[in-house]
Length: 99
Image (cartoon, rainbow, N blue to C red):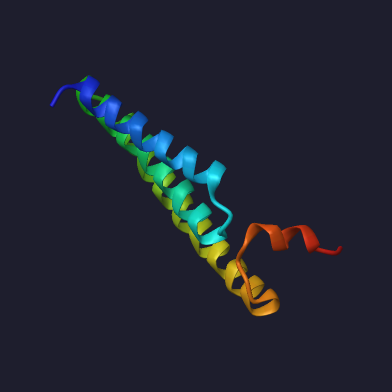
């Protein structure tokens, strides 16, 4: 496969994730959509890195994976607490948050 095909795949995945972020009301689906977007960036970075013979893009992709794992762990913990308190993980219930 050529670099253009990898970048097209990466952009298609990114736009699928962006549509998911913009259209979903469920917090769990919002997390999945952000993960799709982060993985699309990783595919693009790794492809460019491979075709240029440099490991910098692959190192950035590795750090993005580590940050995404911590984001998911914290986000799912907060999601579980929110579900226990409200009984729903719908984004519309977040508007009722009181300080």
